[in-house]
Amino acid sequence: MAHSFATFAYLVSGVLFILALRGLSHPSTSRRGNYTGMIGMGIAILTTLIYAVPSFGSLVLIVLGLAIGAVIGAVIARKIPMTDMPQLVAAFHSLVGLAAVMVAAGALYSPAAFNIGNVGSIEIQALVEMSVGVAIGAITFTGSIIAFAKLDGRMSGKPIVLPMRHWINIGLGVAVVVFVIVFAVTESHLAFWLIVVASLALGVLLIVPIGGADMPVVVSMLNSYSGWAAAGIGFTLQNLALIITGALVGSSGAILSYIMCKGMNRSFISVILGGFGGESSSPTADDLGDRTVKQGSAEDAAYLMKNANQVIIVPGYGMAVAQAQHVLSEMVSVLKKSGVTVKYAIHPVAGRMPGHMNVLLAEANVPYDDVFELEDVNSEFKQTDVAFVIGANDVTNPSARDDKASPIYGMPIANVDDAATCLFLKRSLSSGYAGIDNSLFYKDKTMMLFGDAKDMVEKIVKSLEE
Image (cartoon, rainbow, N blue to C red; front, side, top):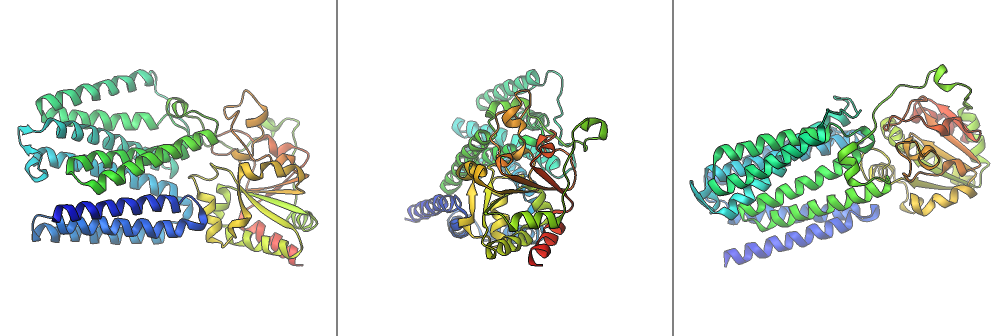
């Protein structure tokens, strides 16, 4: 009876997780989706505490661990700025991978506690599940640490390409498969730890060659890996909720990675095998040659936008860094009072993480009806008086559309150069995260607004009100 009720409770939590994913698919329902997911996780945790904890002492230790984790998580969540959210996600993914490794090790050394046999006679099915889970977990752990270091600036965003890296990766992959077979047949502890070591190395070598431009895909991919690691350990623990949750996270992360690769016109294989992009310095006078830029002021921008019929805003990571979303919303309110139609165009890979811009705009209480996916509004730039680019770079680079030699050629971009005027707000002429110069800076219809995004928009608001 108790087992049946626990199974039913886990199924309820699984349904709530599915509804949570559905809610998170749109900004207007994302808050409800978060609450639904939290309720589902609460049910899963309570069910596990009630039906799966063997003794009161174990219950005390588990509750203590939950309390410590909850406090740490709450402190981090309150202090972390939105600009650091991608690296925080990567760091949390690494913890999921490490947990998978530790749970598998616990099952290896105390199989009776997991109802999978005894030391020396563990069920072969459990051995396979453990080895697959620990391999994916170890790859997720080190891969996520490298992604965190790149996103947080602790490691160069440029691809770090090792000689014969593909052959090294293939060799490690084959070694992992061989060790898994040996472990499943012999239950050798040495084979288990060799799986861990080879997988840890593979996680590092898979991510270091991937450059900054592909980091959003990497974060999504690692999210998928962490889900599959959790699902694998769910089989070892014989925990239905963990299996369902891991499968949902794994599949949704894989789908998101595919969507992002499609948004960048890159295949998943090309991201893994040959990532590009990294930081680079601003062009020098010699680099510019005969090219010149047209520099404007806040007053110029205010005049152009106040006399426009339609303005389309394209936000990017620079807006997030400057925390300019609130003053940008204020600017839009002033423009709307003057009769100007204003829309936001969101590129699928703007920022460092999917949905980054949507969350920031929602934080500034921007109406959902004003925010459009790029594919829904891109054709309107030709009928737009002013395109206002704030902190976006690679996603507006015409080279992706016009230059077949460019490494980002074929990536869909916001066609801001189709507008009558493009106002480009940026600190300097430096390249974006892909490390590629933006030819949009030098076009006749582009007016550069140099400076901190928040300060510049505040000056524009002041000019509009005057």
